[in-house]
Image (cartoon, rainbow, N blue to C red):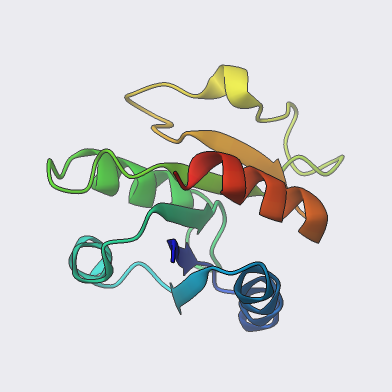
Amino acid sequence: MKKIYLVDDDVDLVESMTMTLESAGYAVKSQHDDKDLAENIRSYNPDLVILDVMFPDDEGAGFKMARTIAHHDDIKNIPVLMLSGVNKEGDFPGKFTNRDIDDTYMPVTEFVEKPIDHKKLVEKVAALAK
């Protein structure tokens, strides 16, 4: 069974995505902050990490977490799917797309838009969690 590690501060969204992913046959573990992120990922050894971009205390926390993952040799090869609610009109002047991914600032594998289309989420997870 493929394992997914989900990091998002929205408890209801985490619960909803967990139910969707578990019903698609994935094991899911989650956390709602960046505390001990590398240790927790290392301990769970997931096939995919899903990170939210924005957290209440830090609008760029997801990017920082992605960089944390990228700087640990033992977990840096785990694909990272970034949940991006910042693309809604008016939040930021541009949109994040897969063209924005780079090894330094945005070391993620792919972006998916919020609000989450659960069918699309399962498709993305299936493609990335190999």
